Image (tube, rainbow, N blue to C red):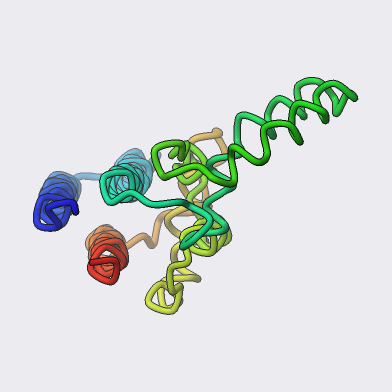
Length: 209
């Protein structure tokens, strides 16, 4: 049985570190009182804030997967949809070989072994994300993990519009109109997201003990 406190503390430490980052972002970009005609400050806040959100989520995934691996057991007995993270190499092979007959044969051949595997064969990259952690992706990953998405629903609109879409537009050279951006409010919103996400992963761990 894994030492639950180790994993809970790991997520707490990661969230505290991200919270300090966000606090520093808020301080640095709200203490600047001069003109910002090109919205450089606002664009920087958008990119850095999103990075904290995505980075923390991936840290939670990594900790949770290691927790599951240490806890042990067969994936299919408790987490059927997590088999997506087990079958990834086989699914990738099917795609790479354009579903050739030999690739299909190998897929079926390996299926029995995959269905009987433990959590040590989970590929965490299926649950991680890069540059597009919006509500739809969050919903899909929560479904794979059998998490309750309800606590994240109040964040849905601002998550998609302000945190993800704005970041995407800034990063790809088509920045939105950020003249009315409330930097403090934007950073505080991200910090609240981190708290909700930490609670989600920690509660999931608690329910397995």
